[in-house]
Length: 418
Image (cartoon, one colour):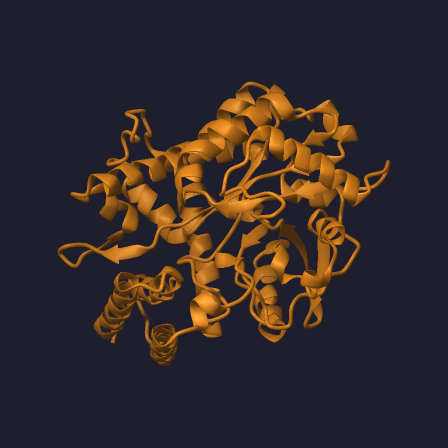
């Protein structure tokens, strides 16, 4: 047995579990010669020194969870981390391995995918690797006929890069933008996920029905324990990301501040012998902004692992937590669905967003009317990439233009297969 996988004795008496989650994604865009490339590649090749600099910081952010999971485990530290990567980003990182030699500070980055392969093989207990959609679609506005394609293509990409064993181990799912459809649709989405072996979802605290009217203590009590979501005749386990007023991971928080919040959560949670510890899972983009690119690991993750884990606060993966402390309480969600912003306005409000939604629905209808033909995978990918949330979320002419070009690109791929 690898000595670094032996259970930390403090885990036996812990009052709180801290597991940070980093969500990773970069959309596809069109380059100067109309070629389809990752936005990361576009930034790396940019004449704008800031874009090129930020791209190397982002690349380091994609490497860091694997790098520090490995090195801290070798040190005998037991801090875990949760991550999800969109399928298009995984493919892009694999294709860009030769271009990602150094970060902005001149330090070696190396082959990110190869490092992740090593960590997922040699240190699997250090990382909760979650599934997500292939092209970061916003499920509440994505045609239901394409949900299965988004889910299955991510699994195919992950299996091709990391092996079928990984996808069989992956039990949790990240809804892009934490976008939750209304209950009647969510039930169908949950069935798709469970059919593929997913056992739990992470949801935003804003999704809990009536949460705005709850006291701070009651909200924290809900956030810090898993629940059962019964919906449309089935059920799935859900955990919740705390609100920013509790832990603002993307805004910046040091290791000591995280520790104090964990202790506070354990007290509100009402820890007692025989009761599950409080589960604290702050989640944010892993590469978006100065904090996540430059300070999260140096100020929070590394010092927490080296200095803060004790008999009160420990760490474990969500999947292991749920095995040890299965949920018993049920939870109800907002009837309109939700997102990490609390609503759907960034995807449904405004003439251009609604027009994009209409065009995506038309594209999807056309695609499925041709499904009787043997469509090539690049046509499927083009459809799914056209559904990328980023094209409408930012509400800017550049991203709307990229989305419209992607729709045209998808039609072109379909016509070639016709």
